[in-house]
Length: 159
Image 1 (cartoon, rainbow, N blue to C red):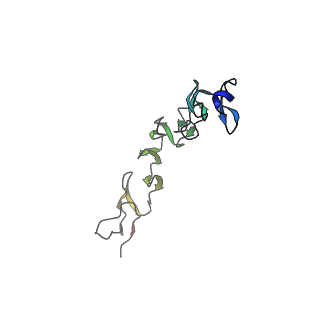
Image 2: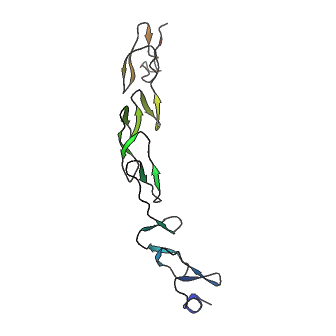
Image 3: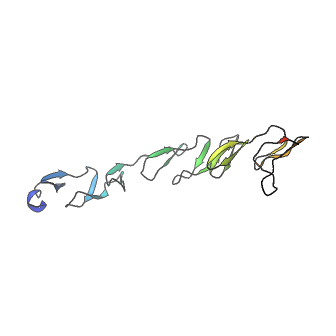
């Protein structure tokens, strides 16, 4: 038995293990031998993994972007606009700085995609780029193995 003789009078089906199985109701064009969809009706998109037609979601451009699978993903809460295709933050709320496509508080820096607060104790002047720019009297930045100050570290008491 094959699909031509078994399922020919049943539209929108394919022959599957001895029975005529329906194809995805949102599928416009499909492979008759296995039911795999390759073109969906309008307002749906073909999920590349499951090959199932999914409804297009309309994302809120102020708070969401569309993931590769077509679902809406809420972006960084401190981000006021972001790239709709990648989710990369483009601008931040007041009190936050854009750093490596992420919004961090003014007193923070980005470290492996997460915001970390600069250590400001014993700091005489502060920079949003390097943290504590200069230490208070009697305090210094720790030195690395090459003799350079550790930028993001706190100021420690001189010894």
